[in-house]
Length: 514
View (tube, one colour):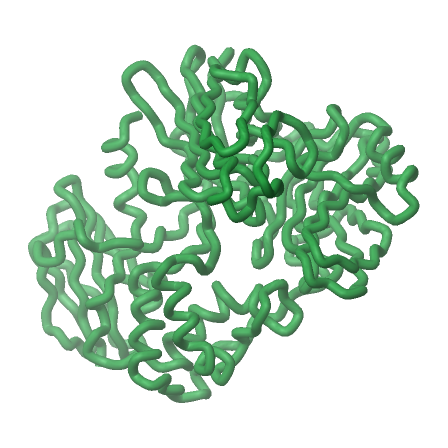
């Protein structure tokens, strides 16, 4: 699949919202800004969260308004390292162009609070579970965190499973959200993690990048604010009997004697009725995957490496997770099938502290003989603020903090007819840029509307979708005639966006309901 095909494929799902939309009235906190902040910022920026300051109420956000505008305009927050220019993902924690503009205009207009009765409820960080059910829970031995530098520690926990099970859902519940920066979840079929844990006088044992055991395989990962990892319908990953669960936890610097007892909740299914999902890293830094190895970066050098893997069978990819250490600068991957190239993931600025798994909105199908391709660049100079060595020194592959890795994990399953049409996430995508969207092809009247809005100039068979000012889809229909009439009588007053998607492209128009 080439780039243009990917771009056209995703357009019908985009939520069209722009800086110009809603410009007639100033946004207020209660109706416009609070829903954005509570959903995308407060889960980390709260009194018990990992972030250094709270954004959990009107006064806090008002006081830090300039900082919030700066971070959202630059798209530093909420953190989402993957580029969205050539690929879009399921459950993206990003702000739309409209949401970023709402925050900016609210701050410029002296932070109007609005009707406080319309403010949504503040999010509550659940300390139990957000899974539909919890079939088994694994809790690490309480650990007293006291550090002025980054700490990476593994905690080995026997699974106590006497038969294989299938993981349908997974969530990490930090014992203390203020100290847990991120968690990698592994399973291991050997006893080595338990031996390493038992050999350390404190709970857990030191490890960086992996568990210290060659038998460990990645199951999932957690970053602050993340929802539970749920497998799509009829898909699940196997957890093997008698395996060991390993939680690798990153504790950031500046923690003075705070206890943590993080736990892992799993929702399980019987293996007989689930399509098995495998998690492996076919793109890695070992031969023959690494094309221009060995993985060795000389001091004061910037170096790029490539890896590749030829597909031995037809499979369906469901998710991807790149992995490097502190010298990492950029990393990307694509699938090459003949003359077609499908982008998979692109991290233009690698940050070890924000490792994530990216689920696909539809499976990416790889034919037998197609080629997975990876590219990673490392910065081993003084200019890299994360360089663990000052002065820089030569670095090779390994599991230590100052060593390097080049891994790209994939969640995949054996192909089944129709996989390319599966909808793994049907929520509308947020529009990140509206510069290429036609805003004048369709017309809507009367505008403002009170009870009915009529749309004309839309092609027969095309789709019409209506979104509210926060980008939520509230109406959808197909065009069957010259005029499409929409009953808006019971809709709340405010600004709405009409999107028309057809083979000729996409058009949007806004209207006011009063």
